[in-house]
Length: 219
Image (tube, rainbow, N blue to C red; front, side, top):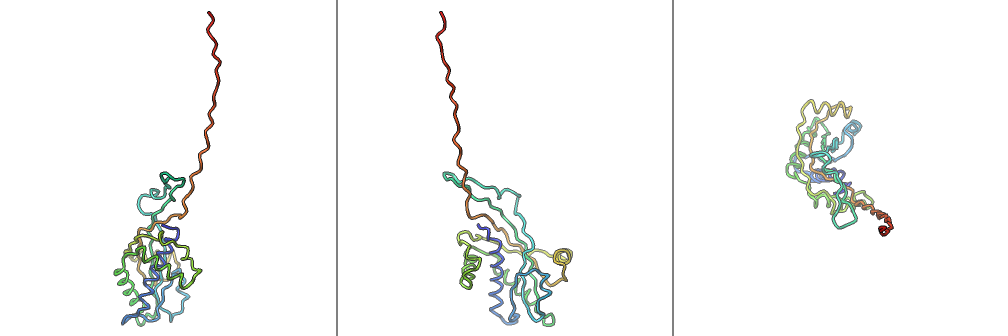
C-alpha cells in the first residue's frame, strides 16, 4: 500500500499496452503509441499519429465509506498503522489514428484482447514496471515506490459505456467531440501513507495527596 498506488496502476496499464504495440503482430497498427493525456487534448494530436490513450476519469471509494480509512494502533508499539483507503479506478481508453484504414478499431480490438488475457495486475508486475522506468530514467518518480508497498492484486474489468454515458463524458466532462472509446475499472486499489504516525506520549497524571490531621476524641 502506497500513496503512489494509483499512479502505478496507470503506469502499468500503459506499459502492458505499450509492450503489445511494440510486438506488432500481423494486422496490428505499426508505430502506434500509448499516451496518458486528457482526451480533449487528442484534438491537437497530429492526424498521422495513432495510438491508445489511457485516462483516469474517476476514483471512488470501494465498499462502505470510512471503514478502511480509520487508523489503527499497533499492539505493543508506539505507532499507529496508517489510514488506508480502498478505491475503484475508472479509466477511459480512447483509440485514435487513420479512420480510412480502421486504425482506431484495430487498436480497440488489440486492447480488449490484451486486457482479457491480462485481467490481473499483481505486485510483481507493478514492481517490474517501476524498476524498468527507473532503468530508463534514474530520476523517475517510480524510484520512490517500495516494491513491498506496491499494489497487491488489482483486477481489471470492462465497464458498460452506453450512448448516454459516453455523451456525458465527452460533452460535459471533456468538452470534446466523441472518439472511439471503452471504459475499464481497476479494483481494488489500496492507498495509504507509508510512514506510520507516532502515538503521542501520554502525559503523566498528577496525583494530589491531601493530608488530614487526626486528633484523639475528648474524654
